[in-house]
Length: 220
Image: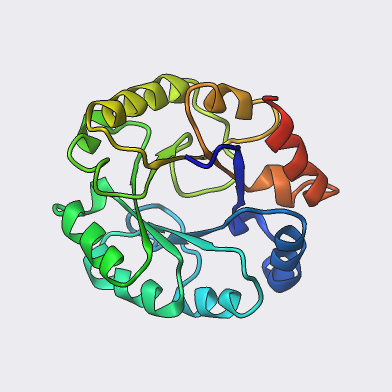
């Protein structure tokens, strides 16, 4: 969709004591989106940040904020993140019985809408959604913690989603999140991924800006 491989550094792996500085660094260094992982301690076994952080980040970067809700009750909380300034909000199909209605609500607020599935969820659940959403987020690790290893079945699952999109004459952004680095990036880009979420590979690197460039260029 983009015509190039885009990078969304995940602040889950940033230094939370220096979050503003870290976000400014990658924003100025070429990040295409900033990925904001929201975890509630229920849908996933971890607890991270909330809408106040999104609102604060909006003040320090012009890079779009890609908010990924890993929460049990998106119907209640989606509006919180939209009001805080999220440019894109992604909900999990596993967390709602009516993803289409949430997509409509996100669009009504003027933001991009995404849907995500976990590694164990059959890609067929996306069949009625790929023509409604702006992006599909494929988890390439089990959500909850950063620094996990890339799940090897992910490239084939991306191929399945690309085929679903073709069948529906849809062209959402294909985003991949988990275990992305210079080694794994080519595996998903070759199958159709547009937007790569990278946390540890960027923020734990000695030079995060150079790390982004290395991931972006690894498949070229």
